[in-house]
Image (tube, rainbow, N blue to C red; front, side, top):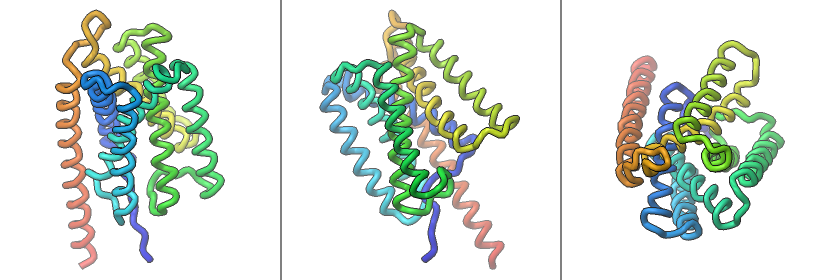
Length: 254
């Protein structure tokens, strides 16, 4: 039986969409827990159910559909926000302890993935069980990125822009290492994936937090709407790219 890839290819557009999805996850997660005042436990439940629903749809489809794939990414970033906040504010483990805990969870997931498939390749993904590992690892990496971003602002005491500058510096370093070093590409991918989360999260905080805390005080809902619209435009671009590639492939084979 022919297998079909289920996930996005890693390109510059992918990373741009990941950052915007991260910002959306941060602002929308805060909208549920803080603006709507549902609290961290209830918000965690709401976002967990949403994640499971879109993940089931993603796993059951037979090919890569951009809108479904990015809905799952958004769900992992939103749920990651609630997991990080729940660990810190409900379990009182703190962002330092939470970062260490989530790093261990991510490391454990990647270890089990490698033991089963003997590799950690993130593209293509055409096996259902490998896809489950892929999404669990993404969920933990987004949760870790959230906790680390909050660690920079709440524990280290950096402003939101300072935190964004530091995480963007790490991302730029990873990009440079990709081109000038022989460091394993899979390791660089997960480093970039983790650090794009706090970069987007700190930018989301910068948009929504009050002026007294160094933010622009735009509100969680307006910031979420803007991020959603930007991401929707990019999803449409990816969709048309895929259609064009399919049309080109059909013409070449005829």
